[in-house]
Image (cartoon, rainbow over all chains, first blue to last red):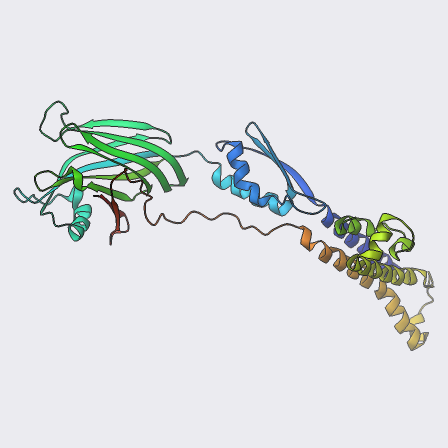
Length: 230
Length: 146
């Protein structure tokens, strides 16, 4: 019986110790960032730091490429998972451009599988009789890149020479999916300029048209499809 | 004194302090705060039960077959004395763990991956109207300027 009592007292002591540590169970951990800016990372994990906890507030600080957090173990685990998820290199962006002419005149074009998907959708929206791929191009860059690509013979005034421009803005990537902010456009000394900013999902084709570029009953359409490359 | 600070001191406080006697910061807080006062009473109760159990006279070398010879009432009393420390421990632990629940912090789920961008955010040139067509093909969006 005495042994049982001693065990019971030990149980009491251990439980009391557990209870006491529950009141003061903040740990400090420093995370080394590989790709994320420390300030960005701090903003990212700030909601996980309980600054207002009475008696034991969470703390966070950053210096260089490190982030130091004082929080409960559970919250530190969550923060670690968040940083693991987001502290990754941003992928490169490959942009597939097509310049398509839509018109009401001219001979019927042969079926072009390169623009079949886009043409099928455009025919549901507009009454143009004819869609023709004028030029296409593939360019690549990373976040912050500015790209210009001439297509066609720009010295020949045949109306089929263009300068494709692209600014790759913020890349939000999760593996090979995500989205990217793009400022894309085409310009031609003979046909004018078409330019816009879009937020496109990887693998999504954005079809940009401008009725003001119309000439001879037709217009010019730009398609851009971003893809992420590691 | 805040309740959080009081809870941290309750375990090590003297019984007189737990009863709210004296002029210490903790005893004053116990007198003024019903929640901490209740916690102090609970600790005193469990501590008292524990003390009684520890002070109970238990023979260090009980004679052989003593349980068979002991009166039934005494056996019940001893069972209670044996169980008292465990009950006290469980009660105290429950008190401490439940009182700390509010201080753990907000429950925040880890982020989930961003959902698909339903439609592109288009910045239209000045003086130009724009229409965005989400087509039947989820991978094709048409942006048309007028």
